[in-house]
Length: 414
Image (cartoon, rainbow, N blue to C red; front, side, top):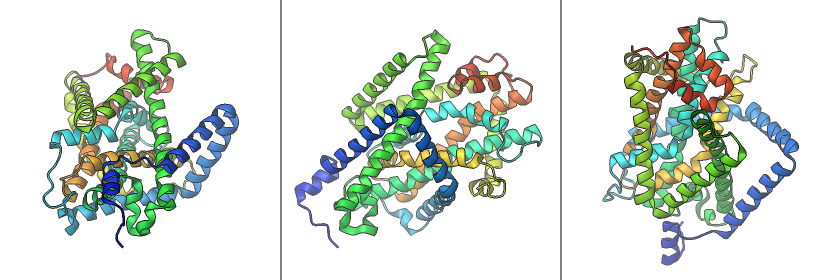
């Protein structure tokens, strides 16, 4: 079936200039109601949200587990099948951004404060509360803690982004459809995506993204405020957190209005450079040889136990670890996928599907694994050597764990 729209309407949709009032007003209404309900009925909201989370994780967790694994299979099939040669935007389309700029933007969009916040906290928490090896040799527990950190922050999450991003990129640039999530459902719904069904899809995408963004901002603002408290003695209070939110929002707004080619690209490159500088400092003054050795070992251990961890649903254990940790992460990645997927699609014109999949799925994960090996791996080594400073730091406040790590005077050179 053909999509009967005017040339002007088609161009406007393609450029993202049309504001769908139904989607906008409906999403705003749901968000305002949710926020108002939470503020007015704080205890009731916490109770009912907790019930909803428990129900979803207990009865739908297996769906999350199955889905994220199927996403990886789908991505690899698309990359290495005949479809891998398809170029986003058509045969003659050229990449809009250099490989370095493209990677910097997709990495910055997909990985934010979680990389900094949880690279130490997650291995320590999983070491103290082992998912499966309680009572075993500490070194084995430490290794599995790193393995599960790789699982939660690695290929599975980027597979979620890859599926959404590739779908939107193909239908936007190859089929000249709107750069909204409804376009990915065209093979299933046809022209009905331009009616109420499409509106429902986009409304859900907006609401999901806003709630996912709120979670991330909550973690990020807490870490920034805690860092200012730890380093400069700035009080950890709501007033300063509001100022931080305003500052972050202002910077993001200026970046967005300046466009992808200017502000977004510049901030992405700056973000990667700052992260690289922090990593190099740790690599140079920290246990350099150990970091490289642990990176290789961690990759091997992760790959060996990949299928086992990725499909583990603790069905025989009768515990709640996987429900509260792994399922939480899959939900968090999914909540961000409409936003990140849309952005990745926007910057990926001119790339082949194979190039898209391999770069989006594999490269960010490898960088993330190196970061976790440097920060989380070094922390695990220190704990096994008897230094419990990082255990105390994580138990006290995970937001300041990184700062304690950087000021730890017990690093060894090898």
